[in-house]
Amino acid sequence: EPEVTQTPSHQVTQMGQEVILRCVPISNHLYFYWYRQILGQKVEFLVSFYNNEISEKSEIFDDQFSVERPDGSNFTLKIRSTKLEDSAMYFCASSGSWREGSTDTQYFGPGTRLTVL
Amino acid sequence: DAKTTQPTSMDCAEGRAANLPCNHSTISGNEYVYWYRQIHSQGPQYIIHGLKNNETNEMASLIITEDRKSSTLILPHATLRDTAVYYCIVRVTNSGGGADGLTFGKGTHLIIQP
Image 1 (cartoon, each protein chain N blue to C red):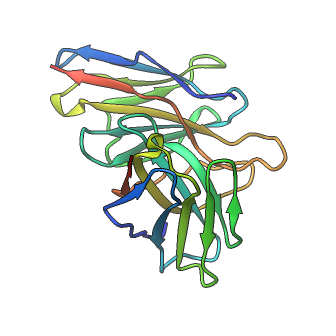
Image 2: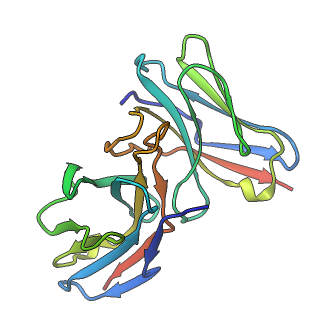
Image 3: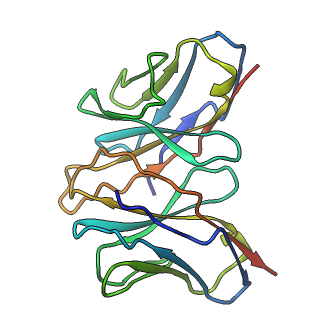
């Protein structure tokens, strides 16, 4: 069964450094998402991406965040200058295809644990 | 998206049916009920969704009341591996597309007892 994959599983970085989190969505999906979950808190939506541009973003997704689909398979989240409060699990998700009967059910990856020291 | 209300936690004995309730009294006619679960700190896992008819798949059954103001997720024979946080999410869905972010609440922490 196709699945969303994410790398790395755990990233440790120093405050102020840039990090790039990588995701490979399900191959025929068209919509891509990033979520985060701070330890002990709810899963929070960050951004959605379609047709090479941002569709929707939350208040959390400020100028320090950016997303990109650099090639036909990867979807990345970049945090330019990490802060201590960026420490969280980051989940990628994908949905939707041109196949008849497809729905926008979102399928999530296993997540990347980001630790900012 | 309409707001949902779920109990904070529930226990169920292994091998028994786990029935997880969700209230969504402000649901609109074009909003679907989605269920996800999250085992420990893993990524949310899709379980099932429905509009107004009851639905069943290999994981669970979804029972939606006739007025659509509440629903119940049923895991027919719960196992220890079903211990997780279960999220009920109400949202509009578009066939063939989508782009809206999901709004997760705190969910129900289901604990399966041996």
